[in-house]
Length: 495
Image (cartoon, rainbow, N blue to C red; front, top):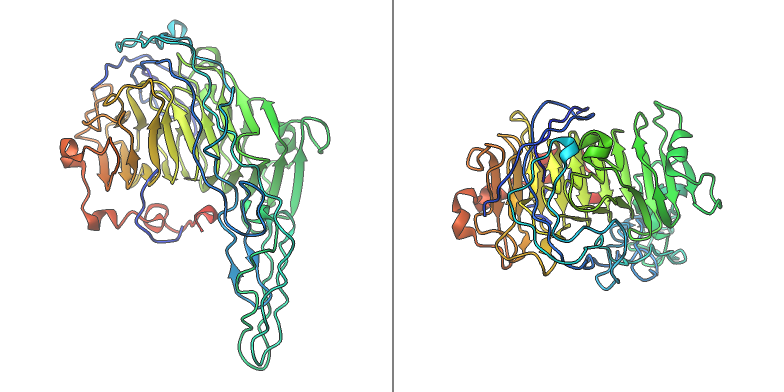
């Protein structure tokens, strides 16, 4: 990920074996100051490559209504009582989308040279080639859902349930009433045609919805104005629907709990800004979006730093507790997704970059995500987890991919930004670009002394014989459940 930086800033329960979803390279040690916490340093260099962008993969949502292409099904209650799961709200990225043009193009062959920030030129040789655009996919738009299901047949001896309608702004319906005179009715056990797909995109309890639209058709034209319209300190369950468009604004979300942001689709609703380490005065300050609010949710959005290649430039920085993201895209190059502190859960997401593009000290789970190198680099992740924190960055399932210009056996899974950095990779599909060593040193911190773990890797990069000391046993891997990692918090996007 980075050249060295010093960062100053603020820094459930479904059991299952989790798996994720993203040699030796020279590193240098520049310093970064900004609103991050702590005084730790993070150093390293990036080897940019050419390479065209490729599309993120994904799949359609569940059947909670007759779904439009790529649509997602909400949670729907049938008329007879038991709730039918209409899928995980929000469509995943469509693998067939055309390449997008988002983000500034990288300059072919340029090194990560940031003299203004005191960055040393990386030792890795720059790969030549043309500029590389931000790797985007068209993705599926959110389905409109179908008409409400009429429910199934009435159970013998009982009256039909009321058939809980989907609540406004993502509330769950009350479900079918218990039949009288003998047992719960069986009708409507799975409402395959009811409810709109958007109901599962926010946690239950939404009481107000705000709409943002660039064309003026909503209450606000910027996301920040919509956030600011909610009183500081508010705990009101609020949903902000953001219509399609690129919102170029440096966004801060703080001091408001139970906020849920929902885009039209992950590839058409884009939150973007173009600061980098030098222009913003530090890596932390370069974030396009900064979220410190607790109990925050976001679905169907792109978080993008459009600066391009050549410097640390964060797309999203998170410091809050119980933050969750569904079907979101995190687009950048170096230091894309900064899970600074707190606890975060990412499901069916896409992260791209070149070096250390998933990093930080938070307890963060990325489940079924795509982690994609759009240029060559040192490592996909760089944790600086505190030694007293049990879990750091955990990848559960998912796949680690790369554009064709990234060399085979060239990118490590992780390197320790902090001496006790924690990163685990369970049941991930690893591309050929993943280095056989798996884990490498960073700024004097050795991987053998960090807390790096791997289990059940598959694919061309799963050369575990070269990193046998990091392998978990089956019983150890079985302990990687959300309940174990997050304790009392069960992310609603995990259900």
